Length: 82
Image (cartoon, rainbow, N blue to C red):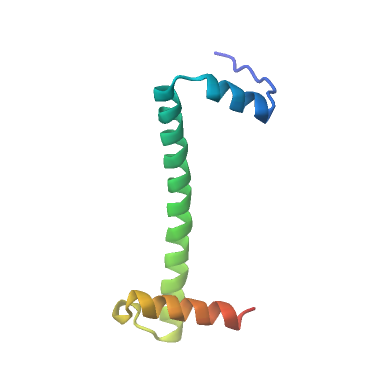
């Protein structure tokens, strides 16, 4: 089936969404939130892999660090590089 591409301005889309019944808006919002959360998880996973690689390179056993120690280490590294 061929796809139809139409150009609609953002404000027109918002207006259409506002006209949806409340339940349909909730379904749409849930879908958008889930998509955003999946993107954030990917970013978080990348950050965790980079942190673990950094710790390994520096000889730090990241498994022994508390969450607070991990945050302080990340802050220290970020401030050193800026």
